[in-house]
Image (cartoon, rainbow, N blue to C red; front, side, top):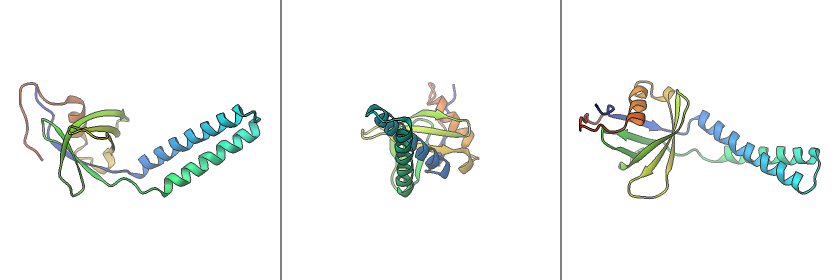
Length: 151
């Protein structure tokens, strides 16, 4: 079996990823506020108002946060590596957490230990590398040692 081709892509917090994350945070805050208000004996009206306020505050606070800096993700045919825009690559492993066809959410676990990093990657930012990236994410290294050269 052949290994997936070598690939180098940029993982960046695009506007779609930030909007999805902001929506999820707001929904979680709304659910917690509504549950708390109802649990404390409130009626539906005050619970809904508390949920709306919590969701709005959370969305505004998240919008004020700076996006994560872009990172470079590399597959050389044998292992994954991640680097800041101008930094050195660190080896690790990748797992697809969410696959929407034109967009992937990847989890990078550094080989040296440390916190996992979540990498949103979309086809729109790198259409030429997209097929090779998907092949590398889902195929992994070859058993026979057929490794391509790095990009």
